[in-house]
Amino acid sequence: MSLNKLTLTKILKCRESIEYFYYVEGEWKDAFQEQQSYFVKYDRDMTWCPDSIAVIPFLGNFLPISWVFDAEIVINEVDEDFLYSIDEIKSGYQEMYPAIDFKGSLSIKRKVKNSVIKGLNKSLLFFSGGVDATASLISTLNEEPMLVTLLGSDIFFHNIDGWNNVKDAVKQTAEKFSLPYSFIKTSFRSVINYNFLNERVAKPNHENWWHGFQHGIAIITHSAPLAYLEGIKQIYIASTDSIKGNEVYTCASFPTIDNNVRFCGCKVLHEGFENSRADKVRKICSFSKRTGISFF
Image (cartoon, rainbow, N blue to C red):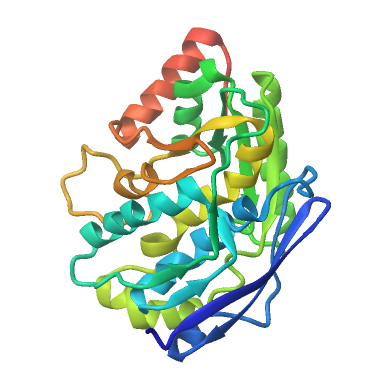
């Protein structure tokens, strides 16, 4: 039995917010900033989101840490689809980092079979307004995806002007194409000790924790409550790297990781991996020339 352990004691859902209460035991304790509140705030009511779905953003953020420290995470319940996808996600990490032994365990009292409430075939695209996300928007535009942007990911809470600029740009893009959009405020990066994780894990593997181990699954899993409540069956996250690259590449957002994430009947696609950066720029320019619609 692992001496490293994290126990989730409570999930508090209050209107638009989900807050997690937990405690950590063992030498891996230094990987966490337990004094920081761990919350995810959506722009719609989360009261009816079941705990088995609400726990998924929490797990998406902390599972990779548990794997590299051979730790046990203890929770009450989890969505069945997500539970069954965990080993495949872990295999994606193991393939990427063969020098690391990804262990760890998840202890649950029960698994829950969920399906999206409204039973609609909606889609969702994580959208920042950059080249990668814009190219993916063009590729998926026929599905009229919901555009989702996180505050607390690349832009932190103190950067009010930066966040307002991004919000305005996302809203303008959504309105151009009559698309729904959603903003999520999350402290998922504030609860992690990057200095510790970089020194102990990432730097010896020529990476940093955010880029190399965290951001793919941690970002994607924020969409689980939205998928459940809004009837979303397909989630897209834009690729940064490309299959056309020649170098051996490590990145926490990669097809062998992202495409294995599943929850409540919803699938994920790492979109645009077949296209280089230049291909994406050409796609955007071609679309703008053809339609007269500009993005930047």
